[in-house]
Image 1 (cartoon, one colour):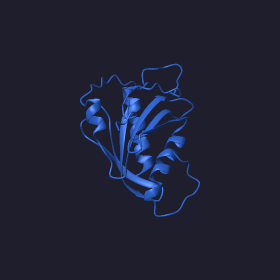
Image 2 (image 1 turned 45 degrees about the vertical axis):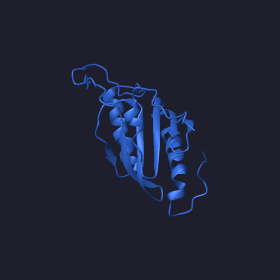
Image 3 (image 1 turned 90 degrees about the horizontal axis):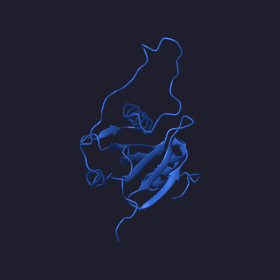
Length: 157
């Protein structure tokens, strides 16, 4: 049966590959269309910080909570870097994690968080999330089978 949920769908779509898991900590790599190289992370926090930086560089989705200043704006940081796609969606979708693979489509960055959709590729399941915390809980619940400790408070896909 063909997987119907496996598509990128947005210009800032990411494929997150989880390669190792210990408790609620995991490590892996992620990919986006603007680099052929993987971006590795050794913790969920590192992954989130790197992805936030990518969104800031891309200036998409618009960050609803930008720093504001009044008066002299000469020192205002602007990034005019033009990102060019170097990887096709098909190539992105071929990337797989040892334990799990997720397509993350962040549609909004509002209220100091992210809102969007996440697809667990191995299960062909897509759910919406309203915050970074909710997205991380969904990944955690998918990785539950690889945990070395028992946690019953995780949401189910």
